[in-house]
Length: 213
Image (cartoon, rainbow, N blue to C red; front, side, top):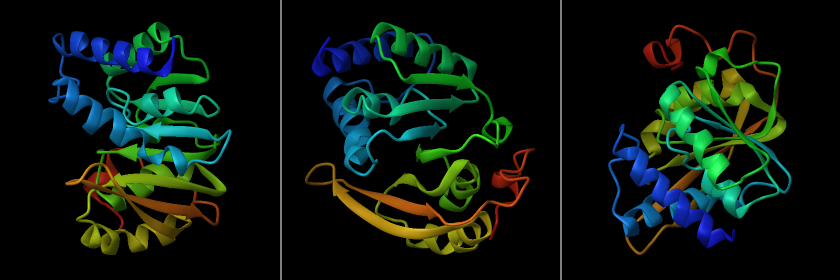
């Protein structure tokens, strides 16, 4: 199965499963290819070769599965708190015959905090100060998190400064990549420069309810 065939089958599975339960509000083929598939793989050139990647809040598999399709060298772990979505992700992995990728049904704060990754990705999950607490504790020192964000991020960046510092990170770069003539994606890249304090991310939904500000 070549790359195009894998994306075709992924689309078919997405639309089919979407009839059973809500995976995406976007089902038109051209829009899925642009807003989900192409958007997801925009970060493929940012991720170093042979990286161990953790994707947080994977949902229907974006960006993790498209990234894996085009970057077979990376090892991907997806995590989502909704079991039906994880079941779907496992069906995609099996149907596309993907290796070096797995899906875990867990809340982020319940993951093994001793396991660290080269890169942690997240797309359409939470405001940046919340994302930093969810992602950065799982990044190896010297590795980084990549947050998929829109162009309107100045306020989010201001609100995330303290969280970045507390959790052990440093803003490395904001990389802008055009999705098409009208849409620009901002990638907020935060490098892990020191160990995160123990206890992060906090349980009980505290990162969302009482974010670091």
